Length: 226
Image 1 (cartoon, rainbow, N blue to C red):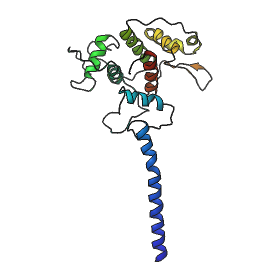
Image 2: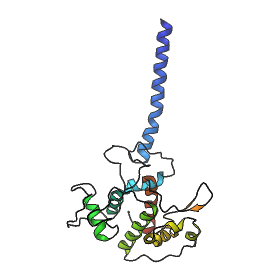
Image 3: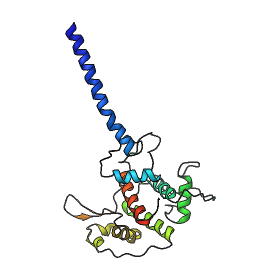
């Protein structure tokens, strides 16, 4: 009987030790990158995510508390909201309605602002495309237009490295100059794929972790978000 009691107490103590040992990890993540439980403070995206969270450019995902969702895909409504926040969350005071933008939604005013500024276009006269996922060349185009909106112009930059990307030709024509500009400034960079090709993946969908890194580079280069 004593042995059974001893074994149970030993198991209980080991369980408590295990749980306590996990607590500092969770606290460290919460302290180092906002209060998000799904972020690794040592991951490649940590610097970018921390920057965007601290600047108020990006926040948690949906209605789920304490989750950033680094692997989630960025949609047009979210990108509109990010750029709107970077601009100080302006109010247009105008009415501009789209069938896919719910009245009173968190992205209603950002969408109205971004379409009126011309930074992003409506997909159709009455459709913004709020739920469509952003690709890397579309992201570059939006940042390029926003830079023009902020500064009044964006100088054309010759980037010899852009010509070395094996997949540069699949960039959408309207985004070609923007991708060249983003590459030249190091805002969007290339990688070597599994076949050894040097690619910039214009059509790749943008994850929230990647978006945070790109936005940090953009803000630091532009001298905004301070």
